[in-house]
Image 1: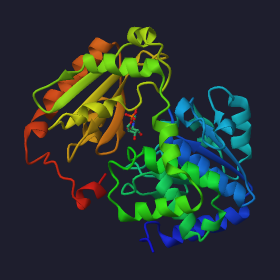
Image 2: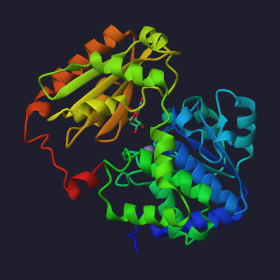
Image 3: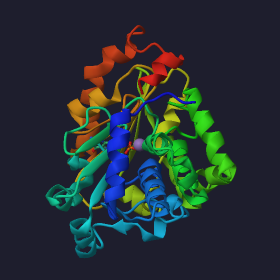
Length: 358
Ligand code: 5GP
Ligand code: MN
């Protein structure tokens, strides 16, 4: 048996709600990642197995390495199919908000979602959720929204309705949000869940290859280039950058720099990694932060980059050029220098209790 992380009253409320609805719209955050897509498709497959009509709508495109996922071809990209998506949202009897904690995270999609009179349920693990849903299943202690989705289905005693396709999607979300079970992954129950999903027929090794080993030659060369230019500071931090011009030179396509920010944490003693990438559509620089131990990326992202996220993985953005972004980052680094160099603050600790915070 697994521990009860979702309030049983909420499980009952959601079960009763499901009985009454037929058309469900599922939405996930902008620049959807493996967990956003995995939890959304997992939920969609589950609802279809319950006889519902379920549609997944995301604000913008998602990376090519997720396009093998069963059901991904039917995902509606809001910035391409707005009128059709607006109609589906208007007709929806229930809206599932997956892997985001505030309407700001779904950009233009927030307008029809906010206007909809359908009940909304949040299923998410980002801290400090906004109050925009009727039912909130917000569990920051969970390693992924996909894990919470599975816990919810189990709590409703509906595991038999999880198909192989649903299991593949849920597993993908659990795997990507833990870096292939290398961080936030010390909860013993996770491995029980993996075992249950393997029981549904998933090939976990094949999923790993499909997600992590599908890169183009140009991505690997870009990685080499970005690493060559990496700057390492004397306070256990590092910076990597990628301008629009450099993206052009390396035939960059969306998702090509996914995961780069994690690499500098392989340096012994490294505590904070920052990756700055000029956006191709807006005059902003996208910020990605990753940390090890107690150093809070969220605090830095909120204070300096108009962003947020998790303790060890956050993001945000800076309006302006790369030079301005680098200056802003170095300002942030100065402000947080003592937290990075104070050994008590950022004690590298991999104990179970520590990791549960993430
Ligand atoms: P990534 O570095 O992979 O883009 O994002 C890491 C984490 O930070 C994710 O959990 C994501 O939800 C969060 N995040 C990324 N960008 C933003 C942002 O602009 N605002 C907020 N609030 N969170 C972000
Ligand atoms: Mn997630």
